[in-house]
Image 1 (tube, rainbow, N blue to C red):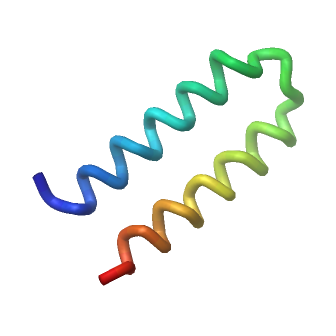
Image 2: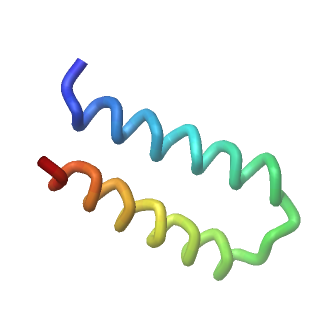
Image 3: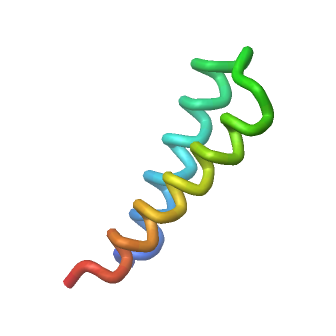
Length: 48
C-alpha cells in the first residue's frame, strides 16, 4: 500500500474517532479538528 493511502486511512480513522467520540462538539470545533488532521496528513505525506 502506498504511503498516501496509509496516511489517508489514518486521517479517516481519526476523523471517525473525533465524530463519534465527541459528537456533542460544536461545528467550529469539527472544522478546526479537520484542518489540524489535514495538516498532519499533509506533513506525513511529505515526510521522506
